[in-house]
Amino acid sequence: EPEVTQTPSHQVTQMGQEVILRCVPISNHLYFYWYRQILGQKVEFLVSFYNNEISEKSEIFDDQFSVERPDGSNFTLKIRSTKLEDSAMYFCASSEQEGLNTEAFFGQGTRLTVV
Amino acid sequence: QKEVEQDPGPLSVPEGAIVSLNCTYSNSAFQYFMWYRQYSRKGPELLMYTYSSGNKEDGRFTAQVDKSSKYISLFIRDSQPSDSATYLCAMIADTGRRALTFGSGTRLQVQP
Image (cartoon, rainbow over all chains, first blue to last red; front, side, top):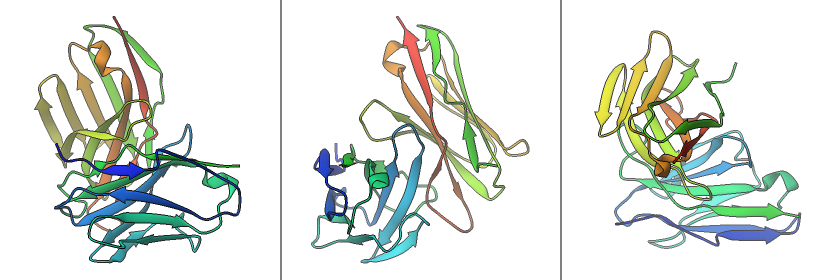
C-alpha cells in the first residue's frame, strides 16, 4: 500500500539552528501539506503546496519557514532559526486533489525537539 | 470561541460497548467533516468523511453530521481493544481556507 514517508523520525537541534524535515509523498499525488502537533495540542495546518508553489499557508507559517520540492519525489520543510516553541511533531500529508472530497494521507511524523 | 471543540477524554469503555465521540464547531462554512484515528506516535489515519448533514456507515463506524446544531458524532459499535487510540475530528470549509481544521482529539481506551 502506498504511504507517505518522513525522515528523520526524531530530530534534536539546538535553538537557532536550521533544520530540514523531509517527506516523500505518494507518487501520483499532486497536493502536499505540512501540519504540526505540539505535545498535548491539536494538529495545526502550516502550509499546502501545489504545482511548485505555496497554495495556502497559516499564520504559523512565518518567514522562518519555507517549503521546497527539490526533485520529483521529495517535499521538504525548512525552519531557518529554530525556537524552543518549534518543538512539535511535524506531519507531512499528500492528496490527489485539493481539500474537498479527497483523502489526505499522513506520514508517521518527525518529532522535532529544540533544546 | 474555538473553531472546533472536542472533549479530550480520556474515555474508557469495556470491550463490546458502543462509543460515542463528538465535536462541535462554530464556522458555518464547514461542509466536509472527517474523523481520523491516531495511534500513539503515528500520523492521523482517515476513518470516514461526510459531506454536509446526514449519516454515513462503514462497518462498525457511523458518522453523523447535524449542521443545524453544528455538531458531529462518530459512533463505534462493538468496540475492540484495537480501537484504543485518539480520535480527531476535522473539517474543511467550502470557502476560504481549504486545509483541514482539527479538533483536539479524544483519547479512547477500550478495556478487554
